[in-house]
Image 1 (tube, rainbow, N blue to C red):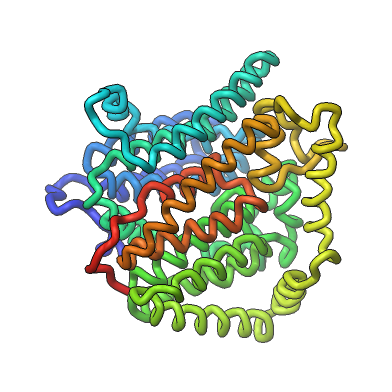
Image 2 (image 1 turned 180 degrees about the horizontal axis):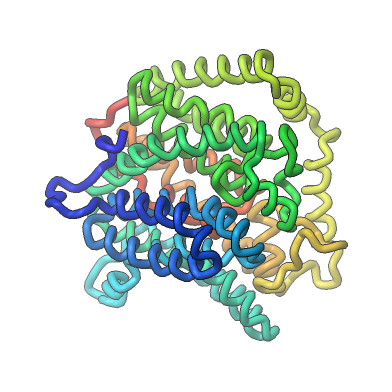
Length: 458
């Protein structure tokens, strides 16, 4: 499997960037429990070193290394927490964000007025200005830590997107193929672990679940977990899995690839995260519109339908999957949907209707009386205020729209990127997709739409 990971033509004899990331992850998993708390800063420094090393080799290797780090860093955090004690801030999760900041020095070229700015960066600059406003609000309130954590979660994906957008246009198909290759390695691991986690959660998962304020992960008992696999929440795991299934399903032909992805598809169902299910359906239907992916889309749709039917009828957890699927058609009877609508009413009924915003100072949703923050619209409204927040949403829609429009060029890579962007459009009202690991995934998709033309493959 690893021999399919994309690398530039001249690899030389040195270590590939994705392998450096894998060795860092494996080494932390083995040594972390022995080193205890000391492993946290060491892992962060290791992520920064791997990011710099991989970027010097190639953008494709760096992209693979970054996705590996985001997929498995939360798992390592829990393993270390079990031996060193619960660390509420999730310090180790900063590591992958530092890794994607490796291309930062190269962004100096944007200050050169003679160089044309890629069109894809218009949305990046728009969101960046809105995030700067939210950061300023936090600083004016004396919330220095909130400003720091909030801004790095938002700015790191934007800066990485800017670096990728500056790469030559002819590299974009290679970068999309690099994502497909690394997900071919990620999906079997996260899928199998996710199934194990649902059936019998390991000790580090149970320990972390009993202490974290995250309410959407279920109970730390067998058959009580909402699967989040190696990641930090069902939403993160499910969103990454949907992206991986689309990339592998359409850009890695053959039954072996689909077989490798099948555990992740089952784990996706066990996440109970309906937003990702809808996102996957939207992406598959989008691929039906194009000749380059239509035949494959029919096969994937049949396979997904068969997998859902088997999972809902022939597995020990079929009943809970079936019940969750049934809620997709419940409409106004859906408690989750009503709660989301009530968030808009609550914000509108504030004395100033949230005109200015609160900055990155949102009370933890695990605290008594705190309002849940679901979806980018509510998140931007609370953080930046209704005016600046809606400007931010418009920029996000522009970014996704450009990726969708590029699919009409006909290349399979462009269609798959458009399908992922289509799924992101579905998620924007329902999930927070622009910060942290999901922000990295969203902005990668937004700037990597390959140029159209012949030569795509299905």
